[in-house]
View 1 (tube, rainbow, N blue to C red):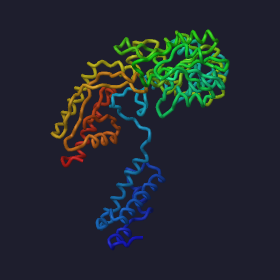
View 2 (cartoon, rainbow, N blue to C red):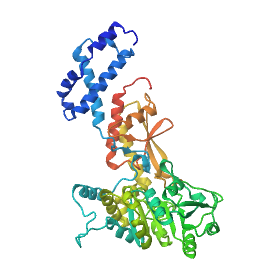
View 3 (cartoon, rainbow, N blue to C red):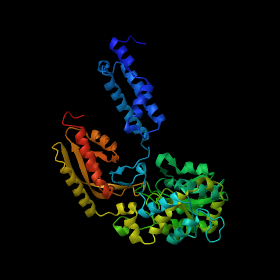
View 4 (cartoon, rainbow, N blue to C red):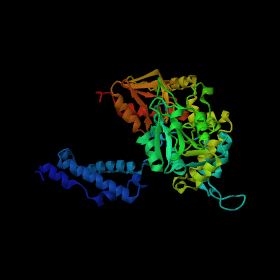
Length: 484
């Protein structure tokens, strides 16, 4: 141990014991709701941090002359640690990034109808696997199967916990130990470094890639078909785009080839949508689920929490014999969804019965189809409220920029928007971003050209006052001074 100065020795002796601090902490109203174990842990951490600081000479050891003040300082640290420990890890944040389906921020927001149904089903018992007509055991898929078939025209449907699971389950059922033929240009990698080839390996299917990265023809598929082939697989490249000298096989042509060789055809849509976005001024780049069903695919898979705007789920549609076989797979139980997902998904799907209600009622659809006029009005309103703070350090500007769809959908699509740019001449953009991110609730924006940008497209209507509060708190916490 290094030689300690006399002030250091005195400071170490002045550190109160855990029991003494626990006694003081239990008298604090601010800590009354915390479990004793959490408070004790926070005290030990605070005392150890203080002890280490003294030993390393980082603590002002001469500032401990007043015992009550010393103990009060420790209690303040304990309060901060307890508050942090009692705060849920999963928290609500304000998405001001302009990325609508933001994977890191929880993807799609649920519709009010879905939230209400989810609350009811989570609060009470339900007929999850109980047939109210017969009084016998029922199927959990019955809650959504008829809706999915009604909306898409499919013969049968089921749902698992996400689209990767849906692909895994379908391949394992239909092509285990057999070749699954897929275009090389469709061997995509989705978020988190999960790749279609890896999913295929885990499923037990044998990958048989055909064509090239940029061009695959129908003859490539046909030449690869052998007695060992289990199915033809088409993967919609929703999260990237190959342009230039390209060629791909339309689903209907692949279906015709499958029928010719008595071979099932499966399509993984990834970000499946039930509406044609071209009706709302967006390009028709994402095939609708109905189009894939009409093209005759035997099995179709897509996500519930991307362009559909529902909870995380992997939706499987297809011919009755195919879906029946998939249901019998033992993996189905391991990958099944729970009652809360079913409740939210059913309510979301019910909204799609009337597209005029679905578009404004499902947050993802509402944000994607928001008019530039509406976004501009919201941007001006927020900018005015920030300018009303009347702080000379604060600069607020309106910038014509672009939002993104996110979630691996429509990667080349730029959605026109008007962002609010915030800068404070005494603070760096990173300092502003960090403060906003650590505010309650956290506000997540983006930085461009040393300016923090907030995009009204993804800011909900009741969140603007919270952003104003955060900016006021930022300015109060950082009085005029040197730029950090």
